[in-house]
Length: 86
Image (tube, rainbow, N blue to C red; front, side, top):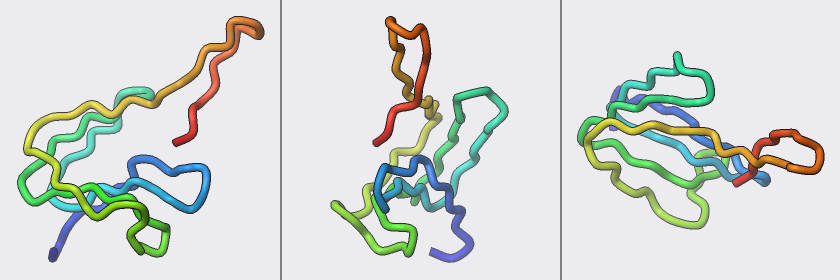
C-alpha cells in the first residue's frame, strides 16, 4: 500500500509488536489514551520489529473511531499502579 501510515500500537515482552498500517488519524493528546480514526484499507498486524509477521496474518480494521487505552494493574498491598505487558 503506497503512502500508508504506520503506528506501533503496542510492544510485547519479546520481539513482537502490534502495528497499525493504512489510512488513519491518531490523536495522542489525551494522557494514557490514543483516539484513532480509521478509514477503509487499514489493517493491524502482529509482527517482529523487522516487519516479519508473527503468530497471525494481518487483520482488517473496520472504519470508525476507536480509543486505545493503556492497561494497568493496581497492587492493593503497595498501593501502586504498574503497566501490563502483552
